[in-house]
Image (cartoon, rainbow over the protein chains, first blue to last red):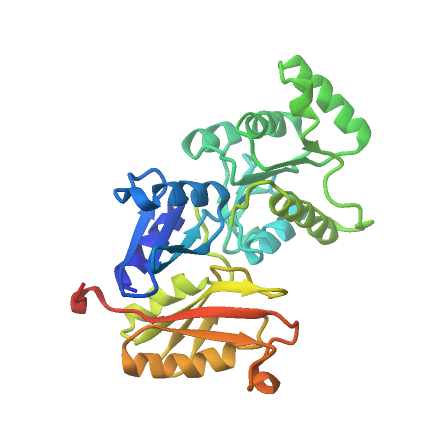
Amino acid sequence: MLSEIITSLNQARRERRAAMVISDLNGTRQEILLEGETVIRSDIAREVADRFGSGKSGLVKIGDRELFFNVHMPAPRLVIIGAVHISQALALISRLAGFDTVVIDPRTAFAAPERFPGATIHAEWPEEVLLKTPLDIYTAMAVLAHDPKIDDFPLIEALYNKCFYVGALGSRKTHAKRVGRLRGAGVAAEDITRIHAPIGLDIAAANPAEIAVAVMAEVIDALRKRSRDVV
Amino acid sequence: MIVSPVVAGPLETAETWLKEGRSLVLATVIETWGSSPRPVGSQLIVDGRGNFEGSVSGGCVEGAVVTEALSIIAAGKPGILEFGIADEAAWEVGLSCGGRIRIYVEPIIMATSAGC
């Protein structure tokens, strides 16, 4: 493999673009394709499209040649709204699990970099951050600020952009009020049912770090049980 | 926006190592049968001293792949390795889960010295 293929794959990863390396195992021919690029060779165009769709890598025999299609899908991303105590643990676990991790909270005292060593943290309103870096289907959102002024907008954006997971902190009572506000804002009932609330798998989590584990487990569950594999 | 993961992936490690001028070999799982711990497409990067990052199994065959990688670096040509419970070396490097895997092992060629 040429070193420049590795450089290109890493760049695609940073830009959150899907990429594919096609290797002819009988020879040395190898090429890299980015999703959306035109496939010149008609004999593999269908295969390339299917594999970008499924995210699955695999070996294919075409004539007497063995071609290996290695699909590199964008890393899943977790956007955490609210730089609260749970978020501190969640940001760490999320990065450990290989997720690109972003924390957003307009309250500068909460969104202090020293509370989130090594994390990408925005001390801005979600409205501003999400305008610059929109959500996508490879993104999960955990809404934890516990303040409708901060939480509601990104929650609606996450549903609208079909994030693969949307979870919101709060008791059933809090969530019932939230559902009322979202309905008032015109969000469809079937979209609202996609919100995981109360957030996190039921493991009887008793403190912020344990709740973070429960949330991360629920995010991974949503990622891996999707019909379409992301990574 | 993007944060490097806490544990760097094999391709990110490869880029760092290439900048340091190390000779590298990339191992990729190309086929699996039965139960196998890592899916097709999983990768492991190895340098000329046997340092490695990533995985192609649950730790069962990495040692053997690293050893093979060193001879691939010397030969400069790709090769295919196969591991399974039926291997003669099963006691040492077989997959305890009973699965079988095929691994493509290829040297990384610096763009400047590329012939194709």
